[in-house]
Image (tube, rainbow, N blue to C red; front, side, top):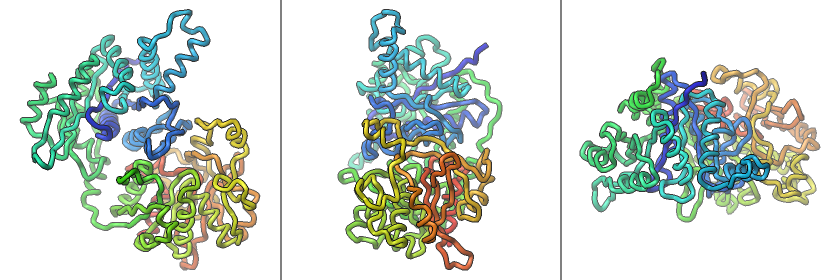
Length: 555
């Protein structure tokens, strides 16, 4: 007999960015801690097939799974909370849905039936939700609906929820995340926005089973009572979710309100254990840490109008936190604009104990990032380069140590005489055909660590933190079209550059380093990877490269 899978939908109202993703991840963690097999899905209303072609300022970070799909950043939160690798069936967009429906229609899979928005679009959504549950062998599938209720774009995801609830009332519940602002000119928490968003949701045929009350402070009983009777739910099912010092505290806040017990009871689940010990210990530890480490992140996707937003680098930020906490310190992040460095403003770099140059694309801010890398190299400040950061570190070394002053990447200068970074062979034809979507080198590939390197030692020192590590070959996630040009490898190595890791299948350079010696004559930590180690960092299992980077920064 097939497993009876249960489904939890999570929606949001009033404004975006309320924390639907963290709510989803927290529910998943709580249920997993009770021995219930879970998986989580993010539904994006975009007509894009995936997140890969959306600019970071528009969408935030593009998170990449092992199987190579470019997704919304919320999948990163899911993975970090439940400590499991997700896959392409965990990410659903309107673009995927319509593409598949049109494919089926063209191949006569509807047997001559007229194809309509309803029921065929929500039915395709439901098929995918159930398939994701089967792929993960999950007891519970948690489905986050992106955006806010009332938007035309996501109404069909809500319709899929309604159909599933109609067909099997006991196996489908809905959690709505609503906002209770406290206007400074009033000094009082207002519940009207939640009431309004629930009314909009109910007009789509869905009454929420739980309301997550997002606010600056914990919601008081009078407002819980008001929300309950105006939104037609039990008062005990209004769950407070106040602002916190760290997102990793939210599962405990939910648990203190017996949220997991209430879900288990409503869905008639059978928990097998209760284990949140390590997670609680981590959160308690974070609270007590006093010492700081100052880490500079050289970005170019943070400025949006008059505001600085860091969503484009969320996995990097979280990986730094995980490693810092494991080293018994709190990170103090210094966000530094690459274009400011191009103007000659290096003052902020002087305060950094460690410098990170993360991934990116295009020519904007590149010379500023290269200057930051040069500063870190010459001043022996611990440096970690990620993807584009590795490519730019190669260029900096080729220019300023090897003496190839015009060294560059063909991404920035297609006519450079010294393309130390060049487009991958198989990518040339794709770019010629303007095949941009989902066509990069994506997903997990092997990296063979070279002995007696910083990277080898880092993974060796912290390998017990990583599951299924077949040392010295590690698997890491990629997202790039350009690579280290092997025609320059011998010259660069002779000039002192160290190759720390290689893809064994294609002999691609995965990690570059500078020598480090116990006598301090070398660089304390200068490592850059073509892959994105931040995608595999978890709160209880920090990534080895970040761990060693923070450890070196503290010295």
